Length: 226
Image (cartoon, rainbow, N blue to C red; front, side, top):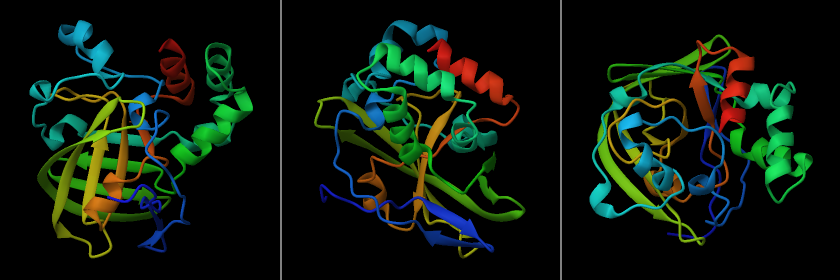
């Protein structure tokens, strides 16, 4: 696997997926395994999940997961970063982190960037929305992969492959929600495209989705709570 990769998250434009501009990236401690925004985990696993969401776990703890863990109607948080809703979140991170609010905003500007503003997952069907354009595919489990970052932290990508659907719908989707066993996601990062290996190498752009039922204020409050 190459250390540097191009961003493979795609955009829907006029009903087709277009590759986004390249973003070179190295796997590092600031990648997905070290994300410090909101996490949602089962109360039964609270004592374990604290380490897991920091990327500290053993292979024996990893379990297979079904697409139903991510079922629902989801909104991108990228528009919330752009319209200033998440300014307080960036300021909060600056108070407790090693970057200024502006630097955190620039980091998440790359991380959250996507034109896919809504995703609907129903059974095995995944529909990608950009405004009034939509593409859909049916996906089945294609295993999972463990990624190790320069920091030593790790993450698990849960992978699903397209079995049918629109030709322009991505061949692969990969979920990361900082979980490693079956549980309903409270939010997630999604990677999609036609090259399974290239997606696994992507660590700088991670379009992030929260339930569409949440208001913009509720999303910001959830992030601030964590």
